[in-house]
Image 1 (cartoon, one colour):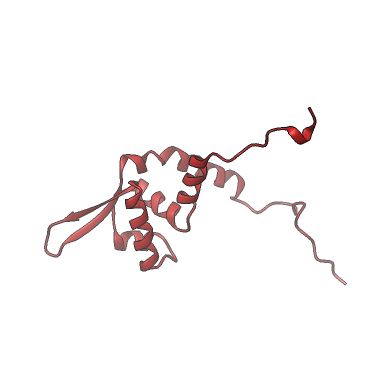
Image 2 (image 1 turned 90 degrees about the vertical axis):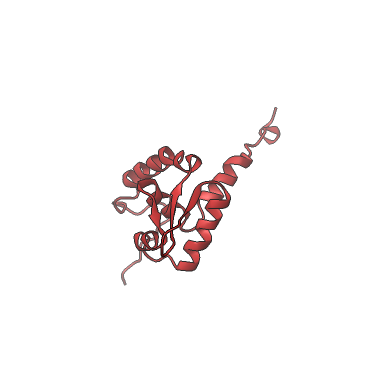
Length: 124
């Protein structure tokens, strides 16, 4: 058989769905913080520099709809609300640890020499 008839690898639809969900902007940071401890909204916002209230609210709602985050209402005066990972969310601890190790190994320091796609500017 020629190389033209070889079966090309296809992306697993579940993998693609998972990477799109977790890879959304701010979602990884939210999960990262909640892996450490249960948090109130303001604590999450403070822990994630640059996130807006609106974006945090949207991402928490998406994660709640996916069953990754649970929202707990504590009937006090005033009412208190906090967020925690569900068992489904806590199951992300090992993948997040692996991503953290990879980031420290490969993204921790700038490359010592330009890669093949990096161009050096010539001085005239």
